[in-house]
Length: 92
Image (tube, rainbow, N blue to C red):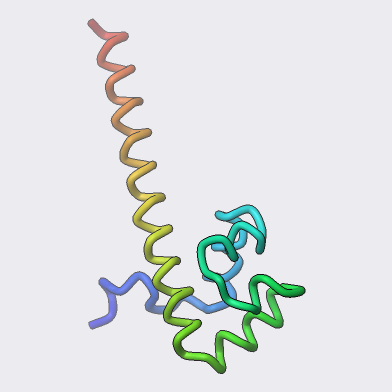
């Protein structure tokens, strides 16, 4: 069953766009993964073509995406804890 796999049903274009957004552009993304399609005249379309043809590069990109998902989950948890603490301080 794939329901526990965060990549299941996720399109490569969506993964790439989310990474580019999270790292504020291809320059930031290329600082995380040094792949030529991210460092030399990058675009979504050219990167997609390369990643679809190159399994090791796609694996690195998907791995980074999973890391970003974990980081976002941690940030949300911290923000929720801060909100909960603020709310309980206001009640006391």
